[in-house]
Image 1 (cartoon, rainbow, N blue to C red):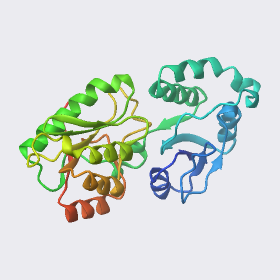
Image 2: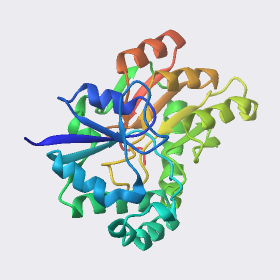
Image 3: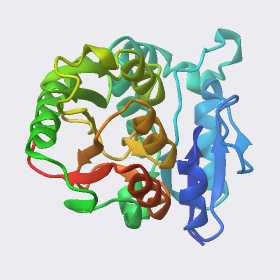
Amino acid sequence: MSRIAIIAGQGALAPAVAACLDDPLVFALPGFAPDGLTATTFQLERLVPFLDDLHAKGVTRVVFAGAIRRPRLDPEAFDPRTAQLVPRILTAMQSGDDAALRTVLDIFEENDLTVCSVIEIVPDLITAEGILTGDPTDADRRDAGRAARILAQTGPLDLGQGAVVAQGLCLALETLPGTAAMLDFAARHADLRPNPKGARGVLYKAPKPGQDLRIDLPTLGPDTVDQAVSAGLAGIAWAAGQVILLDRPEMVRRAQAAGLFLWAAGGLD
């Protein structure tokens, strides 16, 4: 019988995906297993034997879910077949995270494993265009549009998937430390807004231009709402149909309690 495997990373996404599937197999690289979900670890240095093991277990489809940073590779741990892939993997890593991830996806599919997106497996985690709560002002919409344009320009540089814009100025840009670090930075520099009584700012999230949507989709959750509140922002906007929402009802509840808007925006870039 065909089975699906979750390649899990840190955060709440992998448990959310697992909860929607019937008896999935869950695997994770050492040090990246999510809390609250039992995962079997595997080594990237032994990738080809791992793929063979997936086939032996009847796996035909794989979904990547959760945050994974570049692992440190142990040259002495490679098996002979995976060692043949080292030049290809290292070249991709030198080109950035997106290239490295695409190469990993290619290797899975070259070994007759279909890589599925979270959108395909759990479509309820994605929202269509519309406002979930609140009412963004014209100034908020302009700030969201400005953030979308910034990400459209910085995305090809493989920087990040989020930006904070207030009164037309970029207060923070997401980089390797992630969304929480970006919002903490924005909170510590909130006084840079030119008009203290003007627009408070918007967090905008979107995939990078040309990103493979089967992996590393931007994710928002209740904690993001709390962090946006701490940063003094007016709301959160994101690219409709391309950003994962974890525990949407709780996100809406916290946003309503704090007076934030939540907006799945379309056509901003």
